[in-house]
Length: 420
Image 1 (cartoon, one colour):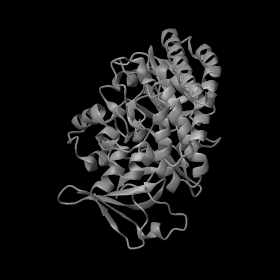
Image 2 (tube, rainbow, N blue to C red):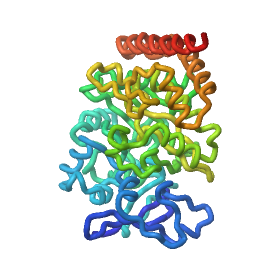
Image 3 (cartoon, helix red, strand yellow):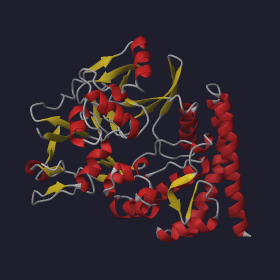
Protein backbone atom coordinates (compact mmCIF):
# COMPACT_ATOMS: atom_id res chain seq x y z
CA UNK A 1 0.00 0.00 0.00
CA UNK A 2 1.32 3.45 -0.93
CA UNK A 3 2.66 5.21 2.19
CA UNK A 4 1.45 8.58 3.39
CA UNK A 5 3.77 11.50 4.08
CA UNK A 6 2.98 13.32 7.31
CA UNK A 7 3.33 17.09 7.34
CA UNK A 8 3.12 19.77 10.01
CA UNK A 9 1.92 22.74 8.00
CA UNK A 10 4.09 22.42 4.87
CA UNK A 11 7.06 20.72 6.56
CA UNK A 12 7.56 17.02 6.06
CA UNK A 13 8.03 15.26 9.41
CA UNK A 14 7.69 11.55 8.70
CA UNK A 15 6.11 8.62 6.95
CA UNK A 16 3.08 6.49 7.82
CA UNK A 17 2.38 3.09 6.30
CA UNK A 18 0.74 -0.23 7.07
CA UNK A 19 2.48 -3.58 7.48
CA UNK A 20 1.31 -6.99 6.25
CA UNK A 21 -0.78 -7.48 9.41
CA UNK A 22 -2.53 -4.12 8.84
CA UNK A 23 -0.75 -2.46 11.76
CA UNK A 24 0.16 1.20 11.34
CA UNK A 25 3.85 2.12 11.32
CA UNK A 26 5.30 5.60 11.68
CA UNK A 27 8.86 6.86 11.49
CA UNK A 28 10.17 10.43 11.66
CA UNK A 29 12.32 11.71 8.81
CA UNK A 30 15.94 12.23 9.82
CA UNK A 31 15.79 15.73 8.33
CA UNK A 32 12.93 16.60 10.73
CA UNK A 33 14.69 15.15 13.78
CA UNK A 34 17.76 17.27 12.91
CA UNK A 35 15.69 20.45 12.59
CA UNK A 36 16.36 22.72 15.62
CA UNK A 37 12.69 23.70 15.91
CA UNK A 38 11.36 20.15 15.50
CA UNK A 39 8.48 19.10 17.74
CA UNK A 40 6.98 15.63 18.17
CA UNK A 41 3.66 14.81 16.57
CA UNK A 42 2.56 13.61 19.98
CA UNK A 43 3.79 13.21 23.53
CA UNK A 44 3.26 9.50 22.92
CA UNK A 45 5.47 9.62 19.77
CA UNK A 46 8.65 11.34 21.00
CA UNK A 47 11.41 12.35 18.61
CA UNK A 48 14.04 9.63 18.46
CA UNK A 49 17.66 10.04 17.39
CA UNK A 50 17.71 6.34 16.47
CA UNK A 51 15.00 6.74 13.80
CA UNK A 52 12.73 4.50 15.82
CA UNK A 53 9.86 2.88 13.95
CA UNK A 54 6.69 3.23 16.01
CA UNK A 55 4.09 0.52 15.56
CA UNK A 56 0.80 -0.78 16.88
CA UNK A 57 -1.50 0.83 19.44
CA UNK A 58 0.64 3.88 20.16
CA UNK A 59 0.59 4.89 16.46
CA UNK A 60 -3.07 4.11 16.01
CA UNK A 61 -4.00 6.12 19.12
CA UNK A 62 -2.65 9.27 17.52
CA UNK A 63 -3.66 8.81 13.89
CA UNK A 64 -7.09 7.25 14.50
CA UNK A 65 -7.59 10.11 16.95
CA UNK A 66 -7.82 12.62 14.11
CA UNK A 67 -10.56 10.67 12.31
CA UNK A 68 -14.35 10.91 12.74
CA UNK A 69 -15.99 8.44 15.10
CA UNK A 70 -19.11 6.29 15.38
CA UNK A 71 -21.92 6.88 12.84
CA UNK A 72 -20.17 9.55 10.72
CA UNK A 73 -17.19 7.23 10.33
CA UNK A 74 -19.42 4.34 9.26
CA UNK A 75 -21.24 6.49 6.70
CA UNK A 76 -17.94 7.82 5.32
CA UNK A 77 -16.62 4.28 4.91
CA UNK A 78 -19.73 3.22 2.96
CA UNK A 79 -19.47 6.22 0.66
CA UNK A 80 -15.77 5.58 0.02
CA UNK A 81 -16.17 1.81 -0.30
CA UNK A 82 -13.70 0.98 2.45
CA UNK A 83 -13.91 -0.79 5.80
CA UNK A 84 -14.81 1.50 8.69
CA UNK A 85 -12.09 -0.31 10.69
CA UNK A 86 -9.37 0.62 8.19
CA UNK A 87 -7.71 3.74 9.63
CA UNK A 88 -5.02 3.89 6.95
CA UNK A 89 -7.46 3.77 4.05
CA UNK A 90 -9.57 6.48 5.65
CA UNK A 91 -6.57 8.70 6.30
CA UNK A 92 -5.57 8.25 2.66
CA UNK A 93 -8.98 9.50 1.56
CA UNK A 94 -9.71 12.34 4.02
CA UNK A 95 -6.44 13.18 5.83
CA UNK A 96 -5.66 16.44 4.04
CA UNK A 97 -7.06 18.96 6.56
CA UNK A 98 -7.10 17.67 10.12
CA UNK A 99 -7.02 18.95 13.68
CA UNK A 100 -3.84 20.77 14.59
CA UNK A 101 -1.12 21.20 11.98
CA UNK A 102 -1.23 17.64 10.61
CA UNK A 103 -1.78 16.78 6.95
CA UNK A 104 -1.30 13.37 5.39
CA UNK A 105 -0.62 13.25 1.66
CA UNK A 106 0.47 10.61 -0.86
CA UNK A 107 4.14 10.83 -1.83
CA UNK A 108 3.34 12.31 -5.24
CA UNK A 109 1.28 15.22 -3.84
CA UNK A 110 2.93 18.25 -2.23
CA UNK A 111 1.25 20.49 0.38
CA UNK A 112 -0.76 23.45 -0.83
CA UNK A 113 1.04 26.76 -1.19
CA UNK A 114 -0.46 28.40 1.90
CA UNK A 115 0.37 31.89 0.62
CA UNK A 116 -2.30 31.40 -2.05
CA UNK A 117 -5.18 29.81 -0.23
CA UNK A 118 -7.61 28.14 -2.61
CA UNK A 119 -11.16 27.83 -1.39
CA UNK A 120 -14.44 27.09 -3.04
CA UNK A 121 -16.68 29.98 -2.09
CA UNK A 122 -20.28 28.95 -1.49
CA UNK A 123 -23.46 30.75 -2.32
CA UNK A 124 -26.23 30.84 0.28
CA UNK A 125 -28.08 28.18 -1.70
CA UNK A 126 -25.03 25.90 -1.80
CA UNK A 127 -24.45 26.39 1.91
CA UNK A 128 -28.04 25.42 2.70
CA UNK A 129 -27.69 22.34 0.54
CA UNK A 130 -24.49 21.29 2.30
CA UNK A 131 -26.08 21.70 5.73
CA UNK A 132 -28.92 19.45 4.57
CA UNK A 133 -26.51 16.88 3.15
CA UNK A 134 -24.07 16.62 6.08
CA UNK A 135 -25.98 13.91 8.02
CA UNK A 136 -25.87 11.72 4.90
CA UNK A 137 -22.44 12.85 3.66
CA UNK A 138 -20.24 13.65 6.72
CA UNK A 139 -17.45 16.14 6.02
CA UNK A 140 -18.83 16.26 2.45
CA UNK A 141 -16.73 13.17 1.78
CA UNK A 142 -16.47 12.20 -1.87
CA UNK A 143 -16.77 15.81 -3.06
CA UNK A 144 -14.07 16.51 -5.62
CA UNK A 145 -11.03 18.19 -4.06
CA UNK A 146 -12.11 17.87 -0.41
CA UNK A 147 -10.00 15.81 2.04
CA UNK A 148 -11.28 16.90 5.44
CA UNK A 149 -11.15 15.14 8.81
CA UNK A 150 -12.36 16.06 12.28
CA UNK A 151 -12.62 13.80 15.31
CA UNK A 152 -15.93 13.28 17.08
CA UNK A 153 -19.35 11.80 16.46
CA UNK A 154 -21.28 15.00 15.60
CA UNK A 155 -21.80 16.23 12.05
CA UNK A 156 -19.51 19.18 11.42
CA UNK A 157 -17.62 20.78 8.57
CA UNK A 158 -14.30 22.69 8.46
CA UNK A 159 -14.76 25.92 6.49
CA UNK A 160 -12.90 29.11 5.61
CA UNK A 161 -14.55 32.30 6.83
CA UNK A 162 -13.05 35.49 5.39
CA UNK A 163 -14.81 38.86 5.11
CA UNK A 164 -17.98 37.03 6.21
CA UNK A 165 -17.81 34.80 3.13
CA UNK A 166 -17.78 31.03 3.62
CA UNK A 167 -15.62 28.75 1.45
CA UNK A 168 -14.76 25.07 1.45
CA UNK A 169 -11.03 24.34 1.91
CA UNK A 170 -9.59 22.44 -1.05
CA UNK A 171 -6.92 19.74 -0.72
CA UNK A 172 -4.96 20.34 2.49
CA UNK A 173 -5.80 24.05 2.70
CA UNK A 174 -6.26 25.14 6.34
CA UNK A 175 -9.78 26.00 7.45
CA UNK A 176 -10.50 28.80 9.91
CA UNK A 177 -13.82 27.76 11.48
CA UNK A 178 -15.95 24.71 12.18
CA UNK A 179 -19.61 24.69 11.19
CA UNK A 180 -21.79 22.49 13.44
CA UNK A 181 -25.40 22.08 12.26
CA UNK A 182 -27.82 20.97 14.95
CA UNK A 183 -28.68 17.24 14.77
CA UNK A 184 -32.40 16.54 14.45
CA UNK A 185 -32.27 14.12 17.38
CA UNK A 186 -30.96 16.82 19.76
CA UNK A 187 -33.25 19.78 19.30
CA UNK A 188 -31.75 22.87 20.92
CA UNK A 189 -28.13 21.63 20.85
CA UNK A 190 -26.81 24.66 18.95
CA UNK A 191 -28.39 27.01 21.49
CA UNK A 192 -27.22 24.81 24.37
CA UNK A 193 -23.60 24.90 23.26
CA UNK A 194 -23.72 28.60 22.40
CA UNK A 195 -25.20 29.39 25.83
CA UNK A 196 -22.56 27.32 27.65
CA UNK A 197 -19.64 28.66 25.60
CA UNK A 198 -20.87 32.23 26.08
CA UNK A 199 -21.24 31.63 29.81
CA UNK A 200 -17.73 30.19 30.00
CA UNK A 201 -16.30 33.19 28.16
CA UNK A 202 -18.13 35.61 30.44
CA UNK A 203 -16.58 33.84 33.44
CA UNK A 204 -13.05 34.21 32.06
CA UNK A 205 -12.52 30.66 30.83
CA UNK A 206 -10.41 30.33 27.70
CA UNK A 207 -12.82 29.36 24.90
CA UNK A 208 -12.93 30.07 21.15
CA UNK A 209 -15.37 32.60 19.76
CA UNK A 210 -18.71 31.09 18.75
CA UNK A 211 -21.67 32.39 16.77
CA UNK A 212 -25.23 31.12 16.47
CA UNK A 213 -26.53 31.14 12.90
CA UNK A 214 -29.64 29.96 11.08
CA UNK A 215 -28.81 28.44 7.69
CA UNK A 216 -31.88 27.53 5.70
CA UNK A 217 -33.84 27.46 8.95
CA UNK A 218 -31.38 25.00 10.52
CA UNK A 219 -29.76 26.17 13.80
CA UNK A 220 -25.97 26.02 13.48
CA UNK A 221 -22.97 26.91 15.58
CA UNK A 222 -19.96 28.56 13.97
CA UNK A 223 -16.81 28.01 16.03
CA UNK A 224 -13.54 29.81 15.38
CA UNK A 225 -10.67 27.32 15.28
CA UNK A 226 -8.19 27.92 18.09
CA UNK A 227 -5.63 25.77 16.22
CA UNK A 228 -5.48 28.28 13.37
CA UNK A 229 -4.04 31.78 13.12
CA UNK A 230 -5.13 34.11 10.32
CA UNK A 231 -3.46 37.41 9.47
CA UNK A 232 -5.10 40.51 7.97
CA UNK A 233 -4.45 39.25 4.44
CA UNK A 234 -6.39 36.05 5.08
CA UNK A 235 -3.22 33.91 5.26
CA UNK A 236 -3.91 31.07 7.71
CA UNK A 237 -1.30 29.07 9.63
CA UNK A 238 -2.01 25.85 11.46
CA UNK A 239 -1.05 25.43 15.13
CA UNK A 240 -0.31 21.87 16.16
CA UNK A 241 -2.51 20.25 18.79
CA UNK A 242 -3.43 16.85 20.15
CA UNK A 243 -6.17 15.77 22.50
CA UNK A 244 -5.45 14.19 25.87
CA UNK A 245 -6.23 10.68 24.59
CA UNK A 246 -3.66 11.04 21.82
CA UNK A 247 -1.09 12.47 24.21
CA UNK A 248 -1.53 9.56 26.64
CA UNK A 249 -1.80 6.83 23.99
CA UNK A 250 -5.50 6.00 24.34
CA UNK A 251 -7.36 5.07 21.11
CA UNK A 252 -10.63 6.93 20.42
CA UNK A 253 -12.81 4.05 21.58
CA UNK A 254 -11.22 4.37 25.05
CA UNK A 255 -12.06 8.02 25.62
CA UNK A 256 -14.29 7.25 28.63
CA UNK A 257 -12.91 6.14 31.99
CA UNK A 258 -15.52 3.36 32.15
CA UNK A 259 -13.98 1.92 28.97
CA UNK A 260 -10.45 1.90 30.43
CA UNK A 261 -9.84 5.46 29.31
CA UNK A 262 -8.11 8.37 31.06
CA UNK A 263 -9.01 9.46 34.58
CA UNK A 264 -8.91 12.94 36.06
CA UNK A 265 -5.73 11.97 37.83
CA UNK A 266 -4.21 11.01 34.47
CA UNK A 267 -5.22 14.37 32.99
CA UNK A 268 -3.83 16.35 35.91
CA UNK A 269 -0.58 14.34 35.82
CA UNK A 270 -0.29 14.96 32.08
CA UNK A 271 -0.42 18.72 32.64
CA UNK A 272 1.89 18.56 35.64
CA UNK A 273 4.51 16.63 33.68
CA UNK A 274 4.11 17.85 30.08
CA UNK A 275 2.74 21.40 30.11
CA UNK A 276 5.44 24.07 29.96
CA UNK A 277 3.31 26.17 32.37
CA UNK A 278 1.67 23.68 34.76
CA UNK A 279 1.16 26.31 37.47
CA UNK A 280 -1.27 28.01 35.05
CA UNK A 281 -2.68 25.02 33.17
CA UNK A 282 -3.53 22.74 36.10
CA UNK A 283 -5.71 25.38 37.86
CA UNK A 284 -7.26 26.25 34.49
CA UNK A 285 -8.13 22.59 33.95
CA UNK A 286 -9.73 22.44 37.41
CA UNK A 287 -11.76 25.54 36.54
CA UNK A 288 -12.97 23.76 33.41
CA UNK A 289 -13.85 20.65 35.42
CA UNK A 290 -15.89 22.69 37.91
CA UNK A 291 -17.64 24.49 35.06
CA UNK A 292 -18.57 21.22 33.33
CA UNK A 293 -20.10 19.85 36.53
CA UNK A 294 -22.04 23.05 37.19
CA UNK A 295 -23.57 23.16 33.71
CA UNK A 296 -24.31 19.43 33.84
CA UNK A 297 -21.93 18.16 31.15
CA UNK A 298 -21.41 14.42 31.67
CA UNK A 299 -19.50 14.07 28.36
CA UNK A 300 -16.21 15.81 29.27
CA UNK A 301 -14.04 12.84 28.23
CA UNK A 302 -10.39 12.54 27.30
CA UNK A 303 -10.88 13.72 23.72
CA UNK A 304 -12.64 16.90 24.86
CA UNK A 305 -9.43 18.35 26.31
CA UNK A 306 -6.37 19.17 24.22
CA UNK A 307 -2.84 20.51 24.20
CA UNK A 308 -1.53 23.25 21.89
CA UNK A 309 2.07 23.21 20.63
CA UNK A 310 3.24 26.71 19.78
CA UNK A 311 6.44 28.75 20.07
CA UNK A 312 8.24 25.93 21.85
CA UNK A 313 5.52 25.49 24.48
CA UNK A 314 2.98 22.77 25.28
CA UNK A 315 -0.11 24.33 26.84
CA UNK A 316 -3.69 23.45 27.70
CA UNK A 317 -5.87 24.46 24.76
CA UNK A 318 -9.04 26.54 25.01
CA UNK A 319 -12.09 24.55 26.16
CA UNK A 320 -14.52 23.32 23.52
CA UNK A 321 -17.70 21.22 23.18
CA UNK A 322 -19.14 22.70 26.39
CA UNK A 323 -22.70 21.37 26.46
CA UNK A 324 -25.21 20.70 29.24
CA UNK A 325 -26.03 17.06 28.52
CA UNK A 326 -28.57 17.19 31.38
CA UNK A 327 -30.84 19.15 29.06
CA UNK A 328 -31.83 15.79 27.53
CA UNK A 329 -33.19 13.54 30.31
CA UNK A 330 -32.57 10.34 28.33
CA UNK A 331 -28.79 10.90 28.14
CA UNK A 332 -26.53 9.24 30.68
CA UNK A 333 -25.84 10.94 33.99
CA UNK A 334 -22.56 9.03 34.32
CA UNK A 335 -19.49 11.23 34.26
CA UNK A 336 -16.94 10.56 31.53
CA UNK A 337 -14.29 10.77 34.26
CA UNK A 338 -15.06 10.14 37.94
CA UNK A 339 -14.67 12.87 40.54
CA UNK A 340 -13.18 11.03 43.49
CA UNK A 341 -15.35 7.94 43.78
CA UNK A 342 -18.39 9.60 42.18
CA UNK A 343 -19.39 8.77 38.62
CA UNK A 344 -22.59 10.86 38.59
CA UNK A 345 -22.96 14.33 37.08
CA UNK A 346 -24.65 15.21 40.38
CA UNK A 347 -21.22 15.26 42.00
CA UNK A 348 -21.87 17.69 44.83
CA UNK A 349 -20.52 15.67 47.76
CA UNK A 350 -17.43 17.51 48.94
CA UNK A 351 -15.76 14.27 50.00
CA UNK A 352 -15.48 13.28 46.31
CA UNK A 353 -13.91 16.60 45.40
CA UNK A 354 -11.47 16.25 48.30
CA UNK A 355 -10.61 12.76 47.06
CA UNK A 356 -10.04 14.11 43.54
CA UNK A 357 -7.72 16.81 44.92
CA UNK A 358 -5.83 14.24 46.97
CA UNK A 359 -5.35 11.90 43.99
CA UNK A 360 -4.15 14.80 41.84
CA UNK A 361 -1.74 16.14 44.50
CA UNK A 362 -3.74 19.36 44.65
CA UNK A 363 -4.45 21.60 47.62
CA UNK A 364 -8.03 20.97 48.77
CA UNK A 365 -8.43 24.51 50.24
CA UNK A 366 -7.44 25.98 46.86
CA UNK A 367 -9.80 23.66 44.93
CA UNK A 368 -12.60 24.49 47.36
CA UNK A 369 -11.99 28.22 46.89
CA UNK A 370 -12.13 27.80 43.10
CA UNK A 371 -15.43 25.93 43.43
CA UNK A 372 -16.88 28.71 45.56
CA UNK A 373 -15.65 31.46 43.21
CA UNK A 374 -17.00 29.62 40.16
CA UNK A 375 -20.46 29.24 41.70
CA UNK A 376 -20.69 32.89 42.67
CA UNK A 377 -19.35 34.16 39.35
CA UNK A 378 -21.69 31.86 37.42
CA UNK A 379 -24.71 33.15 39.35
CA UNK A 380 -23.58 36.71 38.61
CA UNK A 381 -23.25 36.10 34.85
CA UNK A 382 -26.24 33.87 34.08
CA UNK A 383 -28.83 36.63 33.65
CA UNK A 384 -26.75 38.51 31.09
CA UNK A 385 -26.04 35.32 29.13
CA UNK A 386 -29.74 34.45 29.07
CA UNK A 387 -30.62 37.92 27.77
CA UNK A 388 -27.91 37.63 25.09
CA UNK A 389 -29.09 34.22 23.85
CA UNK A 390 -32.81 33.94 24.47
CA UNK A 391 -34.01 35.53 21.21
CA UNK A 392 -32.94 32.45 19.26
CA UNK A 393 -34.39 29.74 21.51
CA UNK A 394 -36.09 31.13 24.61
CA UNK A 395 -37.19 27.73 25.91
CA UNK A 396 -33.68 26.23 25.96
CA UNK A 397 -32.13 29.44 27.26
CA UNK A 398 -34.57 29.65 30.17
CA UNK A 399 -34.20 25.96 30.93
CA UNK A 400 -30.41 26.22 31.11
CA UNK A 401 -30.57 29.36 33.25
CA UNK A 402 -32.84 27.69 35.79
CA UNK A 403 -31.03 24.36 35.90
CA UNK A 404 -27.51 25.82 36.11
CA UNK A 405 -28.56 28.34 38.77
CA UNK A 406 -29.96 25.52 40.86
CA UNK A 407 -26.77 23.49 40.52
CA UNK A 408 -24.52 26.42 41.46
CA UNK A 409 -26.65 27.18 44.53
CA UNK A 410 -26.53 23.52 45.56
CA UNK A 411 -22.75 23.42 45.35
CA UNK A 412 -22.49 26.70 47.29
CA UNK A 413 -24.74 25.28 49.98
CA UNK A 414 -22.46 22.27 50.38
CA UNK A 415 -19.37 24.47 50.54
CA UNK A 416 -21.01 26.74 53.11
CA UNK A 417 -22.00 23.77 55.29
CA UNK A 418 -18.38 22.59 55.36
CA UNK A 419 -17.17 26.01 56.51
CA UNK A 420 -19.55 25.87 59.46
